[in-house]
Length: 368
Image (cartoon, rainbow, N blue to C red; front, side):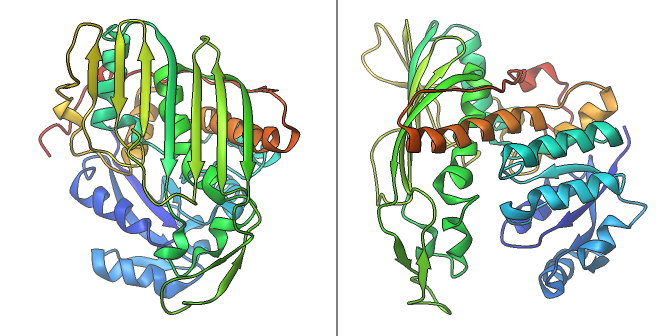
């Protein structure tokens, strides 16, 4: 298998996790050889920290003939532009979520991918974590019987409490839906399959918010998107799920995800993390039990989607964190927003293949 040379465009906070995991966990599959950012000092900081020789503006990464794949870690509003530019430069692309901020933008990416013959993958890849794959295997092995319903909640206070650059989280193309819902949608699609229709109620709780941390403490943010969203999804297999997603909640004791089956209930940990216990309580159990997990995937973190792309390119099979899956997840999110405005149940026009379990792929980095 060819080891890929990978470049990153967008060297903000999340880049650190990708670079660290590339060196410590995924080095058999790819090496990050170049970093690009409009603020060259951001690229330089990580280049010096991780001893990466090449850094500079994004154009340097696009134009590097040795790079096989580009990881797009820019802000959501330019995901389409950066991904298309990378594809046209002859690179495969793995982008942070969302794939793009509009259906037209996502269709454009799919068209250019097909035209260039280059693949596109999209985060989040946490549905390939040890707990997520354990839950998937338990469902497929009938531990709780046929799923009937599900419940999920993403409860957090806004990013202005810890990020001085929180403005874009409240602009069109972001908010709790574009920022956090992809973790839950990818998990649900992996576990339950594609979504058929949605209904939503939503609101902007506070039209103006205040940055709480230096150096911009006290500055105001104008809110353009709903920050409390309560949705109902009907999946193609008939399962009905509720989903609350908010930047307005301090704390909750509710599980991140619960799935209710004919034989029992499954509790799944935070889909924005790669660790945590999967709990099962079957019809005659007196309490919940922790399921043993796939130790093969215990070291996985951000970037496993890149590894899966590289493996799949080599094997000439579909990769799991696909552009089609990302299109469907983002289509559902956009429909939730639209349903919140129309107060109607909306049919989801797109669909996606339910990704297969990782246990179907030979594991070669078990002991790293």
